[in-house]
Amino acid sequence: MKIDRYSLRTKLVIAALMCFMIPLIVNYFLTTYVTKDIVLHKAVSSTQDTLILVDSNVSGIVEQMLSLSNIILMNNEINKHVTISKEQFARGSNSGQQLEYMRLISNLDDLFAQNSDMYITVLGVNGFTYTNYSFSDFNPNFFHGKIVFKELDKLAAFSTAWIGLQDNYYGNFEARQKSPKVLTIARTMKNSSGHSLGYVIVSVNESKIQRQLNSYSEQKIMLMDDQGTILSQSQSDSINIGQQFRYTDYAINENTLVYNNEKYIYVSEPVAGTKWSLLSLVPYSSAVGPNNQILVTSFIMQFLFFTGFCILLMILISAITKPITKLSKFVAKVNTGQLNIRSGIRGQHEVGQLGKSIDQMLDRIEMMIEQITLEQTQKRKAELEMLQAQINPHFMFNLLNSIRLNILIRGDEENAKLIGSLSSLLRMTINRDNEWISLHDEVETIQHYIRLMNFRHANQVQLVEKIAVSSDHVLVPRFMIQPIIENAIIHGFHQYGGQIEIESYTVKLEEESSLLIKIHDNGVGMTSERLQELITKLENGQGGAAPNKSSFSGIGVTNVYQRLKLIYGEKFLMRINSEADVGTTVTLQLPQVNREVE
Image 1 (tube, rainbow, N blue to C red):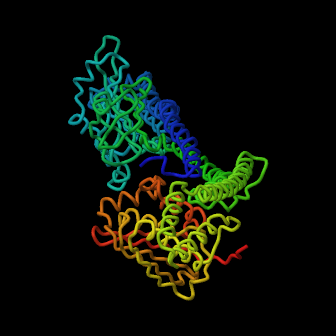
Image 2: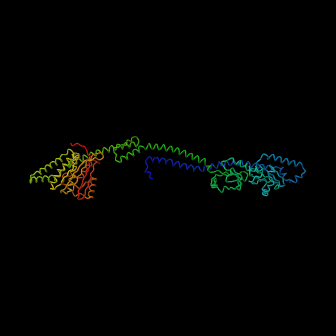
Image 3: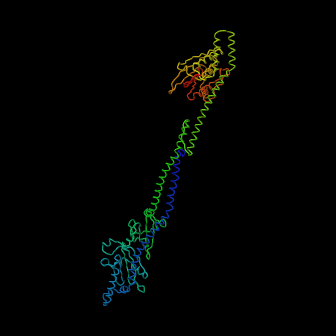
């Protein structure tokens, strides 16, 4: 598709659209590309800030668990009682010791009563047991099947074993349904020599942790141990509590991972003082979505403004290029030959000045055409007068000698007619006051001319006249037919005998009357090649054979054709039909012009 096929208005609109649309699209994609890392960094920073807040809350719960266990570890009375076995305590007679024990239990109950989500268990190696829950809910001795105490014995004093996620074995069935999982830590009570005196086991409902994680619903936050096991999470989907999730295996860069064909931004934050960590997953689309929405909104607003601008631009371009379009159509009409029309485009702008200049140029062209036409008409008239004046002296000399000799030999009436014809012919050629004569007078001139030609060459050229009454008085240019007759005698008959027929009549063509004149001879005719050559020469103004030196006027057929073409223009037609050894027919079609003979 070539751009040259489009109009100037369309080209301007396309150029304007490209000049604005391309920068708009490039700006959108460049802005998206440049801001991508900035948006990602902002999303990571925002996620980290959120995770720090969550870490503060989760750390508070963990610190509370450690604080409760520290109370037990630092309590001398508890340390003293855990060394006494149940048997010793049962058979002890010291009522004061029993009273101290009861006071200790009461104080612990008061201390731990407000921590309903915390389950504290103290197990002495000698059988001492304390819980802040009912033994009917859970028998703490079952811990020996759930916790490997030998591993706890290997820990240093005041160290913590982060046991992690376990099934909730506290409370009744309904309570376990509400919080099916607990998080557990364990610590060892040791004496000064490093021997284990007992164990402190603190558990918290996983739902307590989950409530903290659920405070930020736009993120998926998980609490994980050092093995990647999920201890708690804010949302439950394809990743479940208790499942191992090694997020580093799905990472595609420092802060982005793909899991289950979905892209996430991830941030990890260790929980202070523990072996646990918090992991936040934010869908990439939701993290960068607001920024993309801003970009899309900005792009739509720019596009709407651009669309309005384009509409205004097209209106302005249409108004600006309207004179150019009008001028283009006008020039196209002038190109078809309509020189009489004018553009009428005016104004102080360049197109107005151009339209005015073109109109003035057409005015000058019309004036020049009229002047050239007038000059050519005058020139043809002068040439005709000159040719009429230049009667071949050889012809006149020979003809007059022939008449003189004939008169000397025979004094009959025929010679008188010859002299009369010569007189009439000379009078016709000498009288040049009017170029137009009637068809009747033109045919009469032909009669005189043939009579003289027959006398001169002693041959018999017969003239047959078929002149319609309606065409007899139609005015035609002087000496219009004589050159054609002369051409037939010289070239058609080779100056021997023959018959020439002149036929004329008027017809009505396209509401205009036209005169048709046919000149037919039964001479030698022409071949089709010679005929085509003659027609081509006539149309190109080259003419046929040179006039014979002994001819009457010296005016050739070409001169007749060009003269009539100049007088009548496109309304004049000449047709030549010829066949070898048959003859030639010349048909003239002239518009019927009403003129007065001076």
